Length: 318
Image 1 (cartoon, helix red, strand yellow):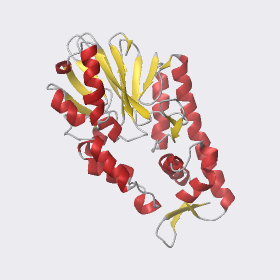
Image 2: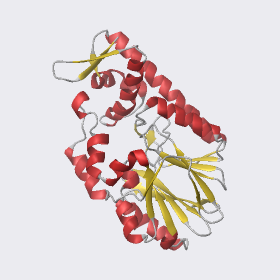
Image 3: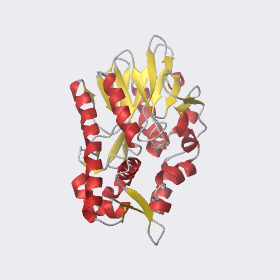
Image 4: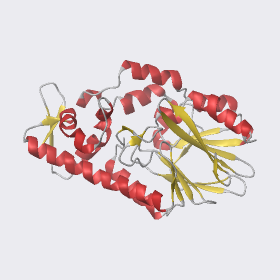
């Protein structure tokens, strides 16, 4: 729907959840934020454009907020159906966005070697059925401004969920489109129920991103998997997300103290996941993303030590 003048939110189903794509319409060009799955473009966005008299040929910029397949999987369809579109992303996320195998190896299976947690082959096979990559035309670093024709947008570097994560500030409305830059206390299902943990990965960058977004005092915080957060609700969402990082870090440290012997990250999660959130098995296992980030922070502060067990898996202790 057109949620603000010339700013459209297009919710595309992804199983029991949705990914919200956004179109910012200028007098000359349209900027698309995220491409979802291949079917998100073909089955949801294209009919939406036709219904609202928006031209696919006016789409000049298709910005991937970050390197996750539910945000980049429609890139191939964009290149096929939008002849003037340039695929854009944060430069640091470019390798994963251009090559699904790199995304699978370096993002989803990052934890396999040192922590014993890997995506199932079924999950990997699913990724390859819904996501089709393309080459990236423009890599952004942040602080770029784009003129869509009487409408300016600013590209913000908002790392934490990934190193190259981008957000888009629509200067006309003051709304900021943040993708997955900030994730509250849980990612949600379409009905608002908790789906899985907030999968931020690089903790101090994530905290800095939250503070940066607060400083813009956005009129709305527009995410990919949550409802619209207008005015104070947006600031409250940012505050909630920042407070959650402190809570998880405290739980990680307390758990290692209480166990009083070296434990693996997965053992820590098994012990403490009910204190971290309400997710069932196997959803809670995706705490590997934030928990590893917090363990790295605690290690950098000298509060915990890392070693290897006999199986070659990282362990953590006081």
